[in-house]
Image (cartoon, rainbow over all chains, first blue to last red; front, side):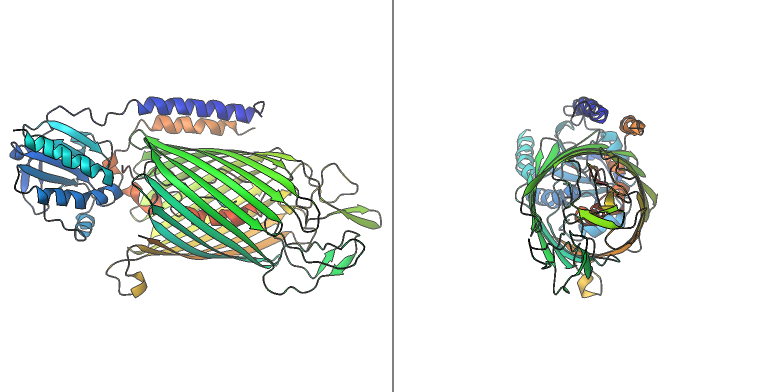
Amino acid sequence: MYRDPMIRICTIYTAILALLVGVAANTAVASEKVGELAPEFTAQTRDGQTISLKDYRGKVVVLDFWASWCGPCRDEMPFLMSLSARNKEKAFQLITVNIDDKSENMEKFLSKIWSEAGVFVVDRKKEIPKLYNLETMPTTVFIDREGVIRYWHDGFTASDEEQYESELSRLLSRK
Amino acid sequence: MMAWGSPGNAQELPADEITINISSYFDNFDVQIVYPNLALTRKVSETTSLTGRYLVDVVSAASIRGEAPETGSDEVRRIVNVVTSASGRSRTVVSQSGGRIAAPPPTGPDDLRHEFGVGMAQLVGGGTVSVNGIYGVENDYASTTLAGTFSRAFAKKNTTIQLGLVRSWDEVFPATKNWRRDKNVATYSASLTQILSTLLVAQFLASYSNNTGHLSDDYQLVPIARGDTTAVLDPLHPTTRSRKAVGTRFKIRVDRHSSLQLGYRYYNDSWEVDSHTFSFNYQRHLSPIAKVSLGLRTYLQGRAFFFQPEYTEEQTFMTADIKLDSSFSNELQLGLSLHGREDHYFPLLKNEDVEYNVGLNIYQRHTDTPYWFNGKQDLRAGYFNIGVRYKF
Amino acid sequence: MKYRFILILPFFFLSAGCATVQPWEREGLADPIMQFDENPIDAGVKEHHIDYREGSAGATGAQAGGCGCG
């Protein structure tokens, strides 16, 4: 079988492809910002207000990047709403950054869930995701009271919920 | 073997859903097949999803009526072969002695082929592994298949690689024969999908398949014309066949509502069959709930080295399988999808988790040689499908 | 095989991957009309009847890639 030139070429091709996969996998940069100051931004919210990240210095901030067309983002949002509501009395702020091309798509999704918690930033020009150099959607960033990124999450599954709770608890317990 | 859908995006499990389809096929070679099928996919954990599948081929107008005279008797039996050649019903058939015998009229479905499948998709590290098992059975053929794929995305999920392996163990036991023979197939496949821009995705595909064992269709008969007499013999195909194919597809965003897909595949094998397939598909959102598609497929094929329009003497390899002749085909594909919407006035469309699909394909194939069984060079066929997908 | 040049296509794709589409730019790509096999079961059933009428097989589709969601 290996005398067949086609098989030889396919074998070599697959080996090179596997090598390239390995190289690419080792160049992931998802969490290189952990330990650095979170990039500052100023943006408009869903209800027309202007906010800046520095306005929340002194609080633990969970910054979530999401879109209505992203399945895991839709799965994550109800949990973040619940997390925010349960920690309402604490020094904690949820900021969600939506990057849908059209606000109506965002509103259509939010109308189906309870969405009364947190601040909803609308970034149609997608400037904040560029600032944070996201690897995937959703990206959830935990920022401490001094504005330093402490935890970075690429993607979301239900098994992440416990980790989010414990990381938030850890950051809130630091003074 | 039914092609199983791969697990979707690398590092994402397929959605929980149930799919019910009823498909029907009909052609001018007098074959009509109805094949309902049902598939269920369900996540059993955050990283694991299971799929179950059942399909039945209900052949109501039979394939070749190779009669099988009992040894020493003139009795004719209707024999049906769904798997290899479903080619047409005829009221007269050619016997092994060369005479023509009237076949009794069929009543009811001629054959049933059942296919059962189970599968599992598992998120592993940064990729997805899926394993599927398929078992198909009918009165003269049984097939067991194991298929595995691994897919992984990298470079911010701009590039996805998928590797696949399919292994089939088939058993052939024609009703006209008193033996059982094996056929084995191993297929290796690879694909690379690359997002080139926000408007363009490209895919490169390759497959290699090694088939060994009994590769002939024993319901076909090869006429040997010797002067004034015609004898018919069983076909004799090589017992190995290695099949190679490479293809590429491009998906282009034309505008906010539509896309265009262009594809090309080149195939060749050790029987010297080679082919070119060109495909085009245009999809458009007509409204928030309706999507249409229009496709064209053109296929050009060269002949197997042992295929002859007419045999005048017995050869080492002989065939009457018209699929191995040089041919071309064209197919027109039409599709309509309706996606439910919460505020829709029509009750069946009120659920956002439901999608209805209707498809019609019109197929035409021309072979250089008339098919020995019915003398026709042109096959004209229609394929109709109606289905519903419900995500839960 | 005279079409071996086709095998260089993946390397072209990989090099083109250096121009990365960012995760936040993928809304258009998440649309079902931008998927190669959005309904893989339907695609498989259609391939079924073609396989029985033509002498070729393979390299017809493998769903991969997508919206960049994690």
